[in-house]
Image (cartoon, rainbow, N blue to C red; front, side):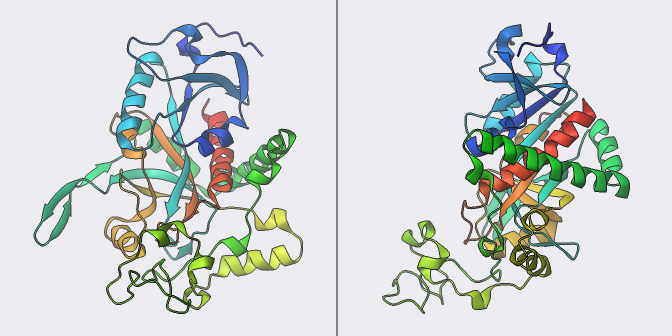
Length: 348
């Protein structure tokens, strides 16, 4: 469908995604136009590929980064600002690793985190006594601060969750109409397991022919174990953390109430952002405790460093530990996309 646009000024919102699974999820909630974003011309040197469309009645441009990480995000955002100087807000939408407990509240897989600030966690200096991070803390712009103050009120927070839940069902229906029904299905509590922070993903001693490289006393693991599932390695449920929300969702699943079980929460907090993938429970908890972190991701610092109005909206697909896998990525990308659609329609 063609829309009556004349210039880049007609696009108040941009959505940036780093991974294909993130881009595909957002696309299921966008009504695309017949023309791509560059129909109206882009700034010299801008090699981003834009796709133009609408979320509700709001014109948006969608950008898929050429690579993950802060550098690719920073470059793409710089070009985006040049080509679309009238943008009101940029959304970074996708998946993240979640801190299991924040302010005594459980975070489970599929929940959505929204940024209040961004901490660049992997820049700094290595000293004999250890790594000293550079304190790269990015605060939101004034317009984003005003938006966050509103969203965190009980009324707007509850409204956001209700609307996002409806958008998730719409996304799943759109996926089903395209033969992708199973991809964005709720994975279930059976696939949500948080292990104790110091229980590592390695060949376990309970499994026959235990790998000699996977030494429990030294903490070492073999390369092969990093690509193998917990079930194959023999990771024991004896070290799984019992969680109240999962217990409730398991009951709902047993009653056949899948829609109720897949209801996710939206939390606001500080993202740790950097090019280093965090796959260690001890490291996760140390960074989170020292810096008040809610979730980990890899692009936000690059965008926020450009001083553009930006909200990070990401679904929790793992717990940033050695047991992380990709089972929850499509669903977490879907919950983030569903939440971003609500925000996009409101801001636009």
